[in-house]
Image (tube, rainbow, N blue to C red):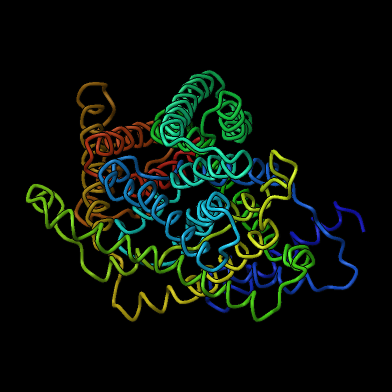
Length: 520
């Protein structure tokens, strides 16, 4: 069986497992990993040897980009402090704590190798986060913080990982050089991402062809990643910066048809990539197990459970004091950002699923040091990484929804309020545009009468009703003018910070569908 046939078979298996997960009401990453574990024991199934760099390049840019594309910049910016505490502070803390725990378990391992492992498992996974959070009803701020963390923390973890691996290979480490390199990678990555984002937006303005624009949007995350890596910047931050920038300007730059096709295209692309990522994680067990000579099953199980527990507890040990201590010390912070409910803090502390970035980083560990000696504990570090992924994905992923129900945490009313405001104001903008066309442009009142009644009904109900009564080309042009007025008001509300991107996308999609229907 060739590699192509295997990949096609895995895609089919991923679709089936995702369907099964939906019917069993469990997160589909969990079903895919467990399914991959089962498939790894299938006799005759050829081994898939993953090139870690290729895995990161193939899967991570589009998944990160799609997440950034639909992230609300307003909410991201408003929560920069907690996001930074998790994406930078927690990653550093987890690296130290997990590395120290591994040194206690295996004193023969050098500190550099232990910290390299800590960096490998320190960042929760963006793929797992978006796949699981999208199916849960939790307060919008929790989702923003957790998704924002998952967008940035990979960059922190990968930088620390590279520095720790270099120290393990050469035996030398400088905190000054490490800090300088971290800043350089971050600045270069963000700058390149923004530059390419601006360039691609400028190209989109001149294309006016949905299929070409969608194809170009699929190129952007890979271009940002490769350009940043070539310039010794962070590919993760480059992709995130490009995605945030393009997402901010998408409502103004792209046509309704491009937005509608692009939304569906990205949903399919990310679903397929997610499916392959998690089933490939499960399939790696056989190769990993074959390399663990000299270790007993009880010893491996003990190490795996201990490191998994430390990884989970380290997150709680950081989240709780980082939430309450700054507010205890700063009255200004308490006034600006009151203490969140303890239930929300527990949910944030429990959401620490690991995934493809950790596995790829572990597989990328070098085989030898600069002196030609085997890299210390490489096979065991890969196994422990796999164990942490399984423990966090299965334990935390499966228990997250019951935990939310147990704590009584539900979706807040922020989105509903914003959506009501947006619908009222956009409908009012359409009525005002209608009056302007009738009085200033000579549009017959009889033609506008039925359309005005419809918008008045919408305004009174503060919700959208289907259908329309204007007929003929003139009626279509009148309705299109009102839709354009609604869209302009919607974008202005987003720019003013009155609504977030989720409400904007929801209402804009309705306007796009109606405009596409009218223009044929």
